[in-house]
Length: 118
Image 1: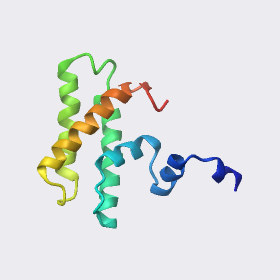
Image 2: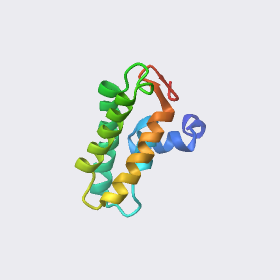
Image 3: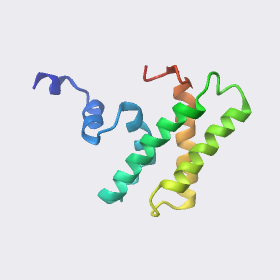
Image 4: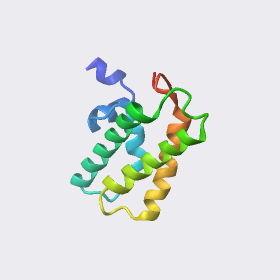
């Protein structure tokens, strides 16, 4: 009981949504209000996979310093969103979400070993 009381609202949401704090941040950037439960689960899966693959493949040492690596991150985010989000998402929404996710990643991850979540 005491542990539950000590958790912040975001930590409680993270547990309820079955997402890490990092994944929850991406999920919040992607999620729309009018999703049904199945679509919401699909968006959670996209958030998890997007972050996992970015960490594995794209967020290399000093990735922000080179235009080519920054572009690779942006293209990867775009492709994940356009290919895997529910059909309810329109192209213009995906472009806007892509920019928000990219800026979040840019601001939050200097590289795989240096980020705001460590």
